[in-house]
Image 1 (cartoon, rainbow, N blue to C red):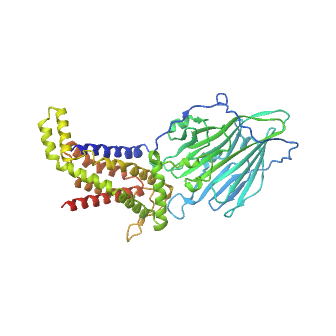
Image 2: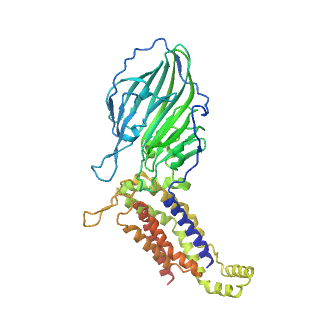
Length: 531
């Protein structure tokens, strides 16, 4: 049947889209890969910053480096007084596994510390090693609504460095007021770079959740996952508003508060390192230059990202149908607010979508049934004009016109729904809301953990196997295509989809399973109504 060919094309296209995400989870948006050295790095025109003559400098007495702790309701940060380098950054609301005594997610590690997260480079020199440091302030314990600051003061030659880092109790965004003072009698030109560094933010087994470098500039959001490109180093200087390292769920980023910065990234020894660099910053003799910058260390939750400048919300990206995925996720959160279980919320959202598309789907099934009735006539035409393709097509069109049947009528309503299906698919695949969110925590009447985390695969593969079975049943209820090859391909699709979904997050599988069950119910209703 002609519409079956269109249907087959649609289904195979959908399978390719899903399979591509399975095999190649995050498409790379190519930056301009390039090596940058002090000699060949383009020097963006420095933006005039606050400069003031300094009549006299306060005394400076270096001290031995020590650790200082910042506690807020959202995180615990530990910094080293020798340069303000980050020692650890633990998120209080996120654990590494679903176990209640699992370690908190720490966005810094021993290996990453060697690359100096929150490090400051002056003319390529690591200030945390090359300068002498002291610190103003001590441990902070911030209650909701409070803020607090730490000031790290250093001397590197004749340049005095002041890094005042301000934390907010209710935000993962924190700011740094950097001040550079030239204590010499001659002007200096400085290359200034702010760095962040982090190990992988996802497990190697999570093929759909990869760690990548990301930045936002004049061309929008760019994401780089290719290890070979990152090991060579990449750079971009076109309108950078933020740059960092991300996974589906977490983001470590630095945000300049002025234009003209170069974003550089490199993968070294398993550590992703990103730097925001500004070259040729003039500091007149006896003057001071201020260069504010911000950082974000936290989950990719829109409520927190929206508080940050520089289009940081763009880091939450659901692909081609992002504009559909985000409203669906808002609806999912709304439903979760009522039922308190994301698994149940997914089921309810799937039902709502199915109800909204019920007329279109119903029209599709009716059109397919009309085409099924014409199958004998179509077979006769094919046999009669098998040697005259043009005449065969003319007779087919005359047949459709006589019986007022649109051969693509069974597929077009489904094509309209595909953006919604893919949008919800991307949202469920990437949403941090589903991370460690339970559905059916234990196998009924046992203490065996089952669907306790909707962001990971079903440990016993129960839901993907049932999903494949419902897809097979759905195929059997649909009139078979006249072409035997097409029929075999259609029957093979449930096996292909089952294989792909075995390692997908269980939340996504639940959505697809429920959608199949509802489609079967709708087809059965149509068949019964005809009988």
